[in-house]
Image 1 (cartoon, rainbow, N blue to C red):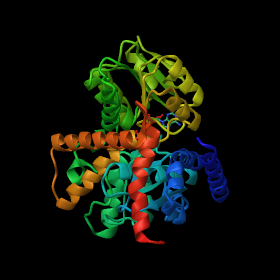
Image 2: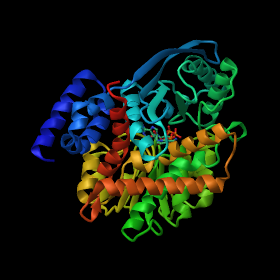
Image 3: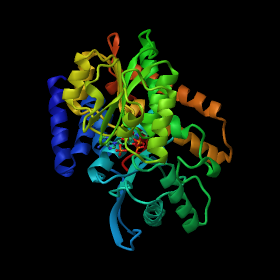
Image 4: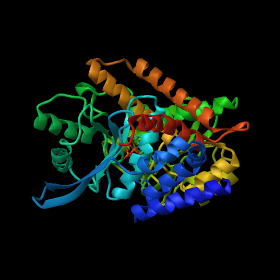
Length: 450
Ligand code: NDP
């Protein structure tokens, strides 16, 4: 980075950290964006005069609320809920809900901020938002989860709507939770409207939504390989996580002829050197989605595989890494290890899974590095398609939705190449940030000072 840019980034970050003290994930997400956007902003006086970066990093509004519910023993329980409505310049707010004990304002602001760029990259009219609660669904009965979701929606319903804000799932919020949330919205509002995405197929959900983030991540990875005349076929792949994104990323990688050798959860990772085949992947789906078990149980049945407690899979030598679990799950040490072992591509299914220094190391090494805002945009893209189907009161076929998803991932890749070309290489971090920024910034300029 040139010195003037560095100075401006430093000044900007000092102000942001002061205004948003104690929010490290938010600082990290903004720094990554601002250090790539600053040269462009310095070259374009209209952005500086309109304080676009300052406005873009200040949420439109944040709603914080108490969620009171009753557990199976009759105890009163209290959690905190949030909705961060970050920016609606190019469409109604859109972004997932996360239920996890680590959820706080910093995490939701980082996620909502990244969502602005991601949603813009899809080419669909969606603003950026994120929400959730510090509720842990793990170990809770279905009835407890239902009562929590109903209590959460009792407040959230005041702030959402198909033309205002359309939440979806994220960590800890899957098909079960979305169903309870939608049922409660319908009961309170007496309206049947597409106010959530990721719904069940019998009540307005879209085919391929469940698969979309994982499939889209692998489509993006394949686009990166194809640009350099290569393919994911025949490559060895490490996947982290075993939730919604990880399961379908692994499935698509298998379908395209790759060998997936790892999956994980918050207790550790499994390594199956001969590759997880389709039946074994079905076993993991059943284990995690239906039985709500632990990934370590895989090795009870498939004894050639090993379980590594409290470790991440990045020490396993692979051609491709697909981090699909959570933020900051791939440190700069992990990045160095992957590079030392000859990794060719890292494509992020999760949001901000690589820390700042790790991401810089991938960019510097010139490997194919697809950041989450571009690579995992397939989920929100198909959510956007679910909204279109709801508005039309139609359901498209799986083939049609998947074809549109592939088209959208291809277009996002092209935008990244256009904005991120760096000699013969592509800096996909700059490409994604700039590609997402331009449309939002132009809309903000057009609205005047609001
Ligand atoms: P799920 O809840 O379905 O799965 C999360 C997975 O990550 C689980 O295997 C979980 O393990 C693991 N995990 C969670 N926290 C940690 C941790 N601290 N350390 C290690 N592993 C952890 O969530 P999703 O698959 O939906 O989301 C995964 C990531 O993808 C998130 O970053 C999310 O923001 C992002 N994303 C999701 C989209 C979607 O459509 N769902 C869209 C775009 C991005 P365990 O079972 O032990 O909790």
